[in-house]
Image (cartoon, rainbow, N blue to C red; front, side, top):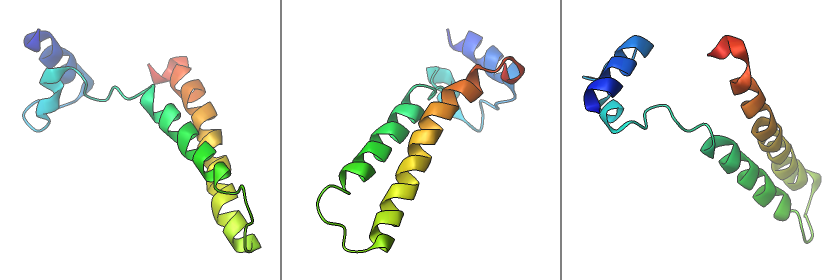
Length: 86
């Protein structure tokens, strides 16, 4: 099995000598975890707004990154699904 992953890694431009994780088969495979982590982070930032924000600065420092995380969580799977990326 390791020889197949090394062959795929060599074709994709990953040097197995510099990145030994390619033998384990999980190199560059975080396609589902990244949007989930972004969505959870965005939701947590929005939940921090419940209560009484002290100022607009506090609101903006939580709302803008939250919406950026949520937008990235939606856009990332669409970006990865494009045929020109494969």
